[in-house]
Picture 1 (cartoon, rainbow, N blue to C red):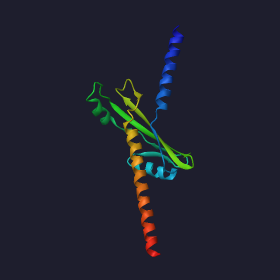
Picture 2 (picture 1 turned 60 degrees about the vertical axis):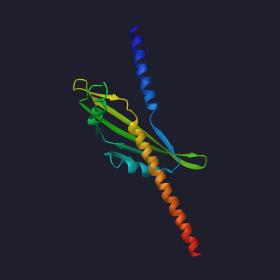
Picture 3 (picture 1 turned 180 degrees about the vertical axis):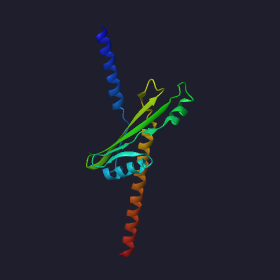
Picture 4 (picture 1 turned 135 degrees about the vertical axis):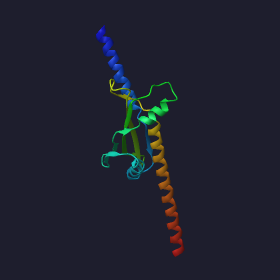
Length: 165
């Protein structure tokens, strides 16, 4: 009886972890891999990057301290203050095709850790998803901006070509 109770709790925890991992924020863009990769790098300039591998399509940050942000947001709720908080971002960019058009998919995983006191140690907590969605939105805006610039340049080139002939 005790064994089945312990086993069911651990399998629920495993299930919960799998569900959380499957909810990793991601977005597919109608841009090629190189354009999307450049947009990701532009956004990630403000973070301390530990790994940047274009062939694998992976960008990872070092641990970033966000204790003040966690404590500020929790100040208006009923949660206790934390002693320390840090997070790490892992961004994957993959190439794909939708019909004959090349597309790229960006997934962002945020590993958030908090430490309430030194006795409990570091504990993994679920991300609220706001930062990930914000980064995905910013990537989309950069890609749209670059697309608009490209269209304007093409239009100017056509107009210049017409003037020559």
